[in-house]
Length: 580
Image 1 (cartoon, rainbow, N blue to C red):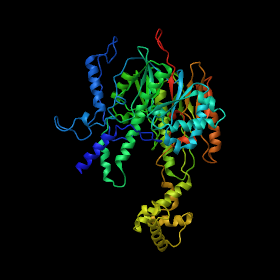
Image 2 (cartoon, helix red, strand yellow):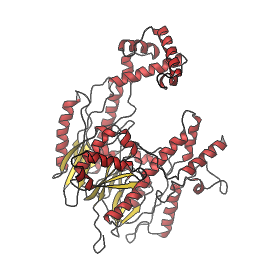
Image 3 (cartoon, rainbow, N blue to C red):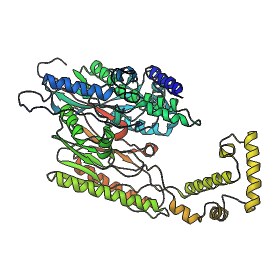
Image 4 (tube, helix red, strand yellow):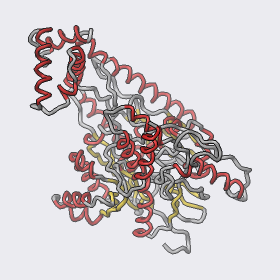
């Protein structure tokens, strides 16, 4: 077994450096295999120099950064025994394209409401294949954004068919040529479409250079060999699963370096790329102007739970000295604050109201609504307490999506069938995991039907009376009781705050707001009234901005809307006397 684990580890190390980046899809979070943290020591204060300008401290910081990105792969080794951490770390993680760098002194952190040069989105082959209906959402987004600024589409450099498919789509539209003149492709290594999460923040350095702050999406403190524990299950190939996930995140993590090259070439920006030693998704990073930044408790936990260390990184790298933490929406969902908070300017912030309650036979829907209400109320209380000088504008939140009853009944039926297979000594995979007509499947079905008829007589699972009769015997509960106990394991919240603000160099601005159709007849009047309130809130927060709706039904089920799939490049102005 030791030889097997060692060989597998060598396989991971060898292959994590290959050029091919596996296609991603709709993955919002990297895998976690552990969490440690580093300590960035504080330094003597001095108004005459940057806090990290002491050479001894710079060396200490650099050593700490190296410790962060070079953890040992296996168990701790005694000095002089076994391979060092540097020797065993997968080369892709300690690559110059991903490892943290030293900070640079900043004069100004660029806020989301400041002028922008271009909109950035990302597309992948798997997205085009698996989410074709979402292309219309992107096409509508392009049509809106083209009225204000350039559009950069980040695509995998080794998959040119993505560019071909986009151009083909544009050619089928009457305004395709006009849109094409505004669109440029950026060849990169992205593996997902969630541009907000892995593209950088921006600031201006004391030298006047534009600084790209590229936080990681990889958990640099994790131990990759923990994935080897999965080899106890012969049903899966954990090497491939882990390798695919890590390569996907590495591909996204490297993408800002490609974007930086494109910005330098096409916009002639004097740009410096800096990588803070923190794992941070852009959708969970909210700035309110001045020195304040809001992160979620999830991001704090993701970075080891040490708020002093996170605060040090925020101060040293981002120039943001006041870190606040809010809680994200409950349940298995995306842990990002841009679903419930949107700053409009230094004085105005939009915040989510609690969603209305909807009658549901499922007890978990009531529990979830109570938890959402508690989170939003506590967040609102904290914001009002910490920022009494700001205006907080409430924005309605659509009802929590209920699981359709037909889907609930289908899941109950499957649970019954699996339990019966266990009782009848029939492999579930033989009955439901094979192609219909397969000899093994046909034999398993015959055995199952004989045993079922022998126990219950004729049963039609689509008949609720039959389903209820069998459920009482097999699962020990009536259909109504089972419906009440049903839980949704993934919650795709709908939100009007995952919006995008655009403002070009001429001062023309717009807000692109996500829109959703009613899920059932009960929601029709609710959604209609909400949209009126949403528009009123945005008009108040963004006076003079054009307001546009964007259909986000095709993507919200994957835990993202407008803000999640977009990013922007600021309209940097070179210092006086410098050549652009």
